[in-house]
Length: 316
Ligand SMILES: NC(=O)c1ccc[n+]([C@@H]2O[C@H](COP(=O)([O-])OP(=O)(O)OC[C@H]3O[C@@H](n4cnc5c(N)ncnc54)[C@H](O)[C@@H]3O)[C@@H](O)[C@H]2O)c1
Image (cartoon, rainbow, N blue to C red):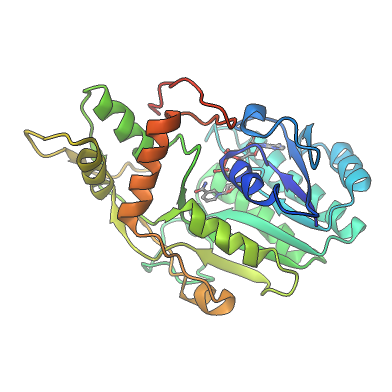
């Protein structure tokens, strides 16, 4: 397999590389502009890994990389999201980037393309858990541009599956309530929880699914990938307190969800389970515990280079 991973230096990309790189007969090429990913997250001296610094929004570069590497499989993980007011950047990467990747993949005859989609595509969903194939009603720059990018992929003349992902939790996770509670509680700082509910899936369950999703004979189309279990941010807080052995004098404040936030994002993955004969197996408690054990060892940092890194402040 010749696997091209756009955005391969990101959190998911680096975990995917950890999984596939040791396999016999696998060559991997990463195309990443390091906007939110880190070169140091990737093995630096693996003979079957090439790292190209560049943007999916640069058509010439995308064409050159595809023509030279001739991938058989593509994981399209690159995404821009870091500035919610920068619609232009999100459109460049998430819309035009997806177009250039789709066209190049068609041209070189890629056998299977796996696209990653955010659950923000559903906007404020009417039904919880969100059924597979529920209507897309995004309202943020990230959600709107990723939805356009996904539509481009699905309309391409390619063997495509697009995965609507829940909150994937595992090595290098550095944003959201899980690292924030860990960092603040360890520093003796106060916390609050937003009154929201999410679907937390362990990285190992996601990677097992990805193995199935990359198969050329696996189903095409859109699939929810999550646990289907609704967990509140307060549940995450309770796990953090229990893991760190902290006794709380008062209950943690729970504040209403912000205006631009979505109260509940939980995915119904039952169709995915049937179609792929797969099910998320790691419990919520074990998912959070594994994450905290990882932070104990490597610190709250997006960077993990197979050697220990110093702690950085993970408040975000
Ligand atoms: N992690 C999750 O739980 C989750 C949930 C839903 C969807 N997703 C999707 O999965 C994908 C990966 O997410 P992640 O959590 O690893 O995020 P990430 O930010 O860690 O990874 C994204 C990568 O894309 C790179 N990138 C950004 N713009 C680029 C460009 N123009 N050209 C090339 N590379 C570019 C970044 O530098 C980064 O390495 C994204 O498409 C995201 O929308 C992730």
